[in-house]
Amino acid sequence: MKHVKEEWLKAFPNLCPTGSNKFFEILGPMIVGIELVKLSYGDEYRPYMVVSSFWNTGIIKNKLESDFKRRISTPNIYSSLTHSDGRGFNIGYYDTSLIKEASSQIKERFLPLGQNVSINTFFNYLDFYKDSSKQAQTSAGEARLLEFKYLVAKYSDDENLSNQIMQCIETGRKVWDMEHFEKWIGNYDAWVKKLENISRNELLDVVNKFKLNSQIKKLHDYKLMIN
Image 1 (cartoon, one colour):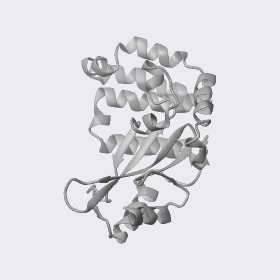
Image 2 (cartoon, helix red, strand yellow):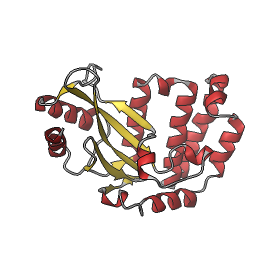
Image 3 (cartoon, rainbow, N blue to C red):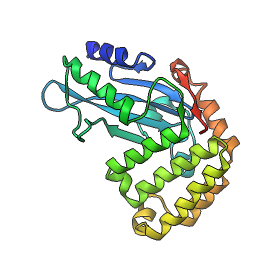
Image 4 (cartoon, rainbow, N blue to C red):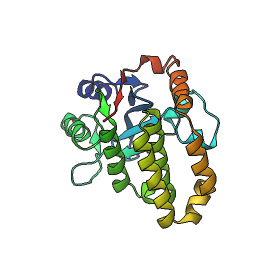
């Protein structure tokens, strides 16, 4: 896949390759980029958008760690790139025209790469992901996305936005399937309390520790901008 890798780097020169099929950058408190997955049939592959926060949702349940490979193997968002009509891209190894189309779709409909991004643009992408993902539309899936938004708002020191997202979380309780929620996340009140008790300094500390990782230092670093 060497020539495939070269073509994707032409389309996104600011992404840094990790192995033969992954291309990443830093965007604020997360790693974002593209993963190319070989299909089980024929000489084709499919590109996926990957978003892995430095905290992940592990800040709620698990001990934090700064292992690069483990973080990118458990992303917050793992979304197949699609045509404007919703069909997934199945790209032949020598089909450069579809690479150009896929890269255009990323720039127009997904998450811009190789540049600073506003929180509003990033949240619009999360909403787009929710609308296109059955998993994100479950009660636990929607809660995890709101949790992700809350952590980003807290990290950005935007108190108004944090409060707005917490209101959405409180509203969600009224409509979520709480049996499903508790199966995948746990007790609602305990979850909300842990979220509310997270400090911005704690989030910043995790991000700063991650950025000391030798593999992460190689990635281009872009800012998540306050609106």
